[in-house]
Structures are given as C-alpha cells and as structure tokens.
Image (cartoon, rainbow, N blue to C red):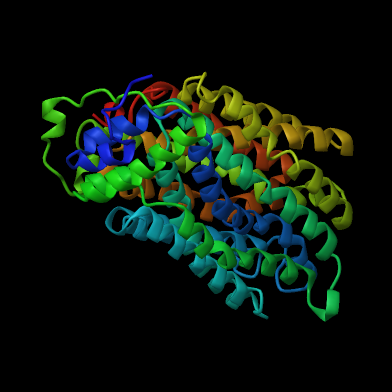
Length: 480
C-alpha cells in the first residue's frame, strides 16, 4: 500500500493531476479490478437491454397469436407474402437494419449514454403504438419503426459496455449483460403462454404481451441518472477534464469498496499520449488493418443471423409444424426459452479463458449439430432437450460475437463500424423470415435446419480462418 503526502487526499491529488490523454484514460480503466462499482454499471446497462431483448424476442412468441387472430397466416403462396408471419418477422429486422446501418454512428457523435436513453424511449413508444393496431400493414409499419430504436440500442449497449470495463473482464461483462438480457426470453415466453390463447378484457392476448415490453420507457431516465458517459469516448473527443472526473469518481468508489488503493496505471508511451485526435471516417473501415476485419464480420453477420434467428424467432411455429398443438407448443417453447440465461452463465465461467473466436466457432458447431438432430425428432421430450441445446449454443454464440466485434475497432469509430457490419445480420435476418417460411412450406422442418446448418458452416469458416485474437488485450492494442 502506498502512502500519501501529509494533508493530501486521493481526491485532492486527482484534482491536481493535469488532464489525461485518451491513452492514459484507457490505461487507468484497464488496471481497475472487477469491483462491485464496475459490475453495478454493467448491471444498469443490462437492465435497459432487458427490454431491448424482450422486444426483440417477442416476435416468436406472439406469432401464433397473430395467426390465431386472423391478422396473419403462417405461410404464403408467394415468397414475399406480406400477410404472412414472415412479413412481421421481416418488418422487425428491416427496422433493425435501418437502425444499425443508418443511425448507430450517432453514438460516436453524441455519446453512448445519450443514445442509450434516446433509443430505449424510441422503441418503447413505437411498440406501445404497434400493440393498438388492427391490420397487418399497420402492425408491420410500427414494428419497423420500433426496430429502428432496437437496432440503435443493440450496438450502443455493446459499445458502452466494452468501454466501461477493464480488459481482463470484457468477456465476463458481456456474458453478464446477456445473462440479464436473456431472462427476458423466458419472461416473454411465459406471458405468451398465459395470454396468447386468451383475450383478457376483450383485448387480444398478444397485445398484452407486446404492451408489457413498452414499460422500458419508465426506467430509462432512472438508468441515465446512475450511469456516466464513457470516459474513453469523452477522452477520444478531447473532453479530458470530464473523462478524468468520471473516472476519478469510479476509482474513489472502488477504493472505498475494496479498502485499498488502486495500483498506479502503466505510463502511456509518448507517441500514444501525443497522438492527435482523429474523427471517425467511414472510409477508414476499408483500410488496413480494419478492411480484413470488416469483410470477415460482414460475412459472419450475413450467416449468423440465419442460424440464430432462424430458430429463436420460429420456435413455437416449428413445434406446431412438428404436430404439437398451439397451447402445448407455447408451453414447450417456454421450457426451451427458460434455458436462455444458462448460456451466459456458462459464458461467465469461460468467456475470458477461451479465446473469443474459438467460443464463436464451437457455439456455431453446436447449433448445426443439435439443429440437425431436432429436425429428425418427433418425441416432445427430445424436441425440448434439443431445443434447449440449440438455445445454449445460440446464447453462447451471442455472448462471443457481441464482445468480439466491438473489440476490433477503435473508440473513435467503434459504434459506426460495428453498426455497419452488424447491419448485415439485420438485413439477413429480415430475409430469413421469408426464407424460413418458404423452406417450411416446401421442405418442412428438415429443410429449415438444412438452411441453418449451412449458415453455421459459413460462420465457422469466416471467424475460424480470418478472425484475429482478442482475449485479455487492451482495446488500443487490438485496434492498432
């Protein structure tokens, strides 16, 4: 333990230190322990993300209710049938594509905290309006509008978390965020099981399920008041005094909680400290070393969405196609959905021990293998067991790649670059609704999982062959 000069305090010393450079701020963050103060920030962000996941995943669970109400049909005669359930799924991902492709760069311009709050309010309001619509076109429109907000939120949360935590706990932090977020899936599945087959107070059950998700707006400002702006982002924007104050407050909390002084951060090199501030340019992602990473992630996201959402967004419908009744399909889907948080729990134990790209490849392999077995089963017990195993693979894949893609780009352009590459998954998922519906109509459940398996093989090839290593490396080191 170090000693202080007579009459000095940690706060007075921090106030006397000149404004820190971006490199010095990053070094101070990376030497922080995994203390309660850090985990509290991660929990608050994850709580906002809970409603984002609820909104994202209710697509699967209100689907049977939309069909039952007569607003949609399960399949359509034409590939682009906008009265079919595939159109509702497509509208969701069209909004996600617009949000991630067009607007995530706002988080690089206006800050992580500002866009986190704005996007949460945006999709909560749009979801509330969607629940009141009485025609398929109107529902599709408001689903698209809500999806824009969700798309912005997805990338902003990933960017936010990666910048708040030190390098030695990034994997665990993302696993914890997903643990909290994925509890939304069994919640929406349980509510759908209760409400979708009924019409409480004459209001369609699926509308009750959707309205519950709009409650995220009620806690948006509470979260905003307790989560600071990213110190890394502030320093990168030249706002060094604000960054130093934010970090000093966090350091003081950690020292009070642990009862010991933090170690001195490693000194930033002269070149890093003196490096000029650079604004993000979209063209930069097509220049070395980012060009290869950009292309790899574009290919990865193109195919991972087909495999991930091809199952997650169609669980009850696929079960119905296997001969299970709507009521029982929602019950079985709830059992499968209840396994979602267990993937991130496993991730918290292994995410910082297994290389990130290896975790992604193994998770994709699990989806392909267990999906193929699911297609051949008729036993309800085996369908649930394999559905759980597919879900565990999917959630571990999500934990891995959400942490991975934000690590590959520098702070000044992190949200912009990740929004661009991630938008490919939104575009792919938008068409996957039509692809899954088409495969289900003409080839049945085996055709659906043949499509998913092919997508997972492409995922393993892209990341396994071309993805760089990132575990326990500083964001500056990875980006350079």
